[in-house]
Amino acid sequence: MGKTGIRTTCSALAGACALAGLCSPAAAAPNGSQMQIGAQVEGRCSVSTTDMVFGVLDTKNVTRVDTNATVSVSCAGLLTFFRLTMDWGQNASGEQRRIKNASNNYLPYEVYRNNNRTQRWGQRNSESRTGVILLGIGNEDFEAYGRLSGITPSTPKGRYTDQLTVTITF
Image (cartoon, rainbow, N blue to C red; front, side, top):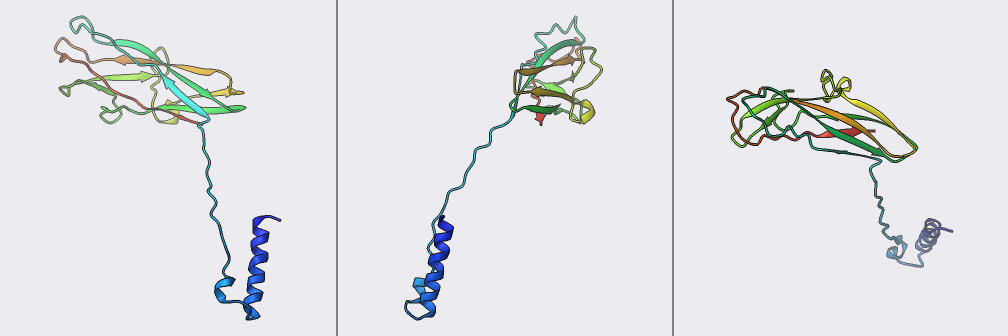
């Protein structure tokens, strides 16, 4: 019999003892013990990225720069469907992504889902990428195509950066 059954029997005996007047009310109190409950949940999917680097720019000869990066997804499980989205970055103005230098100067850029740079990669379902991984085998890689624009000969010098968050939903 498990602990619950034993506790019920002891409580019933203590209750009968108290009703018969053979023991004090304190003896009728049930005994208990604490049980620790815990679990560790591991993520079934993970996402990793390479950096998107536009490089060192010559502002006299360049008006825009294209580059790319890779987003990799790996999942455990028999069959995993997932969706990838990207936020607008830390320096966005509304939905316009921008890189920023130390003097708070900005340059607009965008991240696309296709090489022709016509399908923006964003947060809406229509701007996301989807995929499936079978049997938890391997990764699925997606190219992210970047375009930096707005470069002129008067573009302030400096190192420009931003950081996007790539989110996987499965």
